[in-house]
Length: 259
Image (cartoon, rainbow, N blue to C red; front, side, top):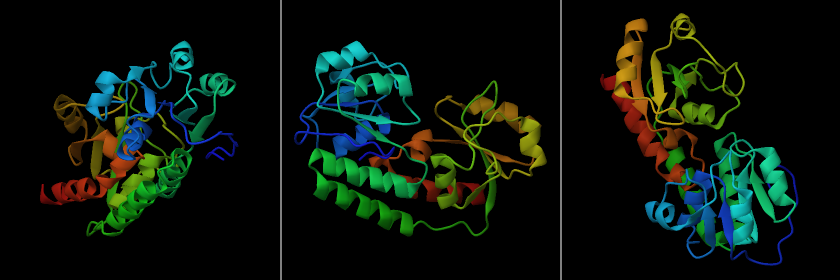
């Protein structure tokens, strides 16, 4: 059963896997499934040699179903939020599709262990989740809660609500999401950020690639707010990259307090 509650039938351990999600593609690599993975998206940039050499089957929201069909996968790995339901359903009519649905760390750990079970890499997946749990348990909380906003898009400005995976990562950092009472990815204004007494504004590297120039422009409107660029993969990739996230979060917290 996948994380959407759907049961899929597999005759055995899959030998031809197509991944429609970048963070789960990286997970498959770290589980040692180099030979089994045949297709990935154009956004699956990790690991680099997979990006260069694996067959690309379009984007996460624009999957080339004919390219997937040509690969004749015995397993497709998708995500409820990152992929388009109609495209996933069309593929599921032909091939087994395992779909994740992730909004917090616990669901990420469940996903890793489930994919380990499906792909015959149970021991590696268990070792990975154990290590992720250990590293997050050792994550040092900042001395005080930091009122924080996290931008994912510009024109219009968009942030993250309290029901998202990024929100859960912020909470693990000790950062209080000032838009926690909103859902999903609401459009907001810079004036709202200021009115909510935001101490820290994080500009993500993805999906919109914020740069240093954006800090300069926003700082004029938010003179009392610390503004920092952050690696969006650390906050939004819910696979094996979680091994690296706690150390990154601690450095980010230290940078805030040392500035």
